[in-house]
Image (cartoon, rainbow, N blue to C red; front, side, top):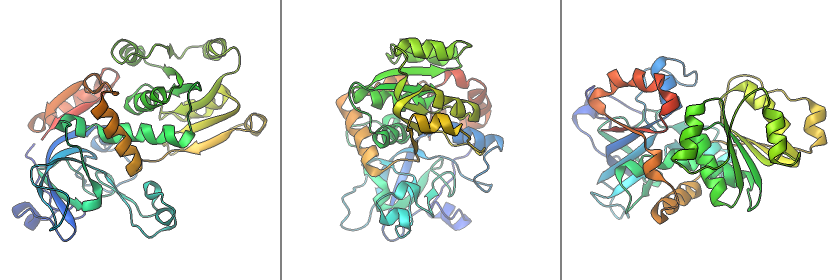
Length: 336
């Protein structure tokens, strides 16, 4: 694959390829690393329903500043990440300080061309300094920020019993930040390989494989009370529907997964628990900042999270292999 030269996420023309540069209020970034996630795999296989093809993918981004506006705090050569959620700044959500669920949001790599290219110019407010972190670490900030956002939104506190369904990258991110907040975390998955890695490489002591005795096993772990907060990061409608069974009375159910199907709960079960139901979408700047601080302090096992690297030129041949081996790949990063 020949690296694409992309001047603006909203335009990819021959002129842009020939002459990269930043527009007014934009920072031009030389891309160095791009993390791959489930969304990218779905786009590659043609199974992503929320975008129009063709699309330059890439929303987990690490790079260095090439050009910044006069008077900007950014400087050439500075290592940065990019918040890929570009809000309109005017809608009801933006006015209420929730740009992560902007009515007109443009997510790089999904609604607009992303960062799997040589250069990208983005609004200055989307660029974040990650001084002291590597390019690889910069490219892992976004997926961790989704986990940090979900934990903050659910109001996890020390001593809470937390169940995280799904031990993929997002589920692991949720579990890491719930644990940092002092919660007692149980990590659940249908895939033994992911749970083995979470236990042996990431240090999660309580992992559980989904089986026919799941309800009884979870009840036994909690003296029949079940969990103060349950997070779903499975991407499975069946798992999302079943998750209500594991929420303690007075507890919270936080849905990090997004699926196209209708989500249906039995109302008596939902009401008798007085369940708080939350949708968790994207992340806020404060979530990115929390991840950056946690990385700088060593609180996040970044080396263990980064399981695979691939050169951009090899990506066409490697992408199908990465998808097929997803159970054993936590985070693959492209070297641009």
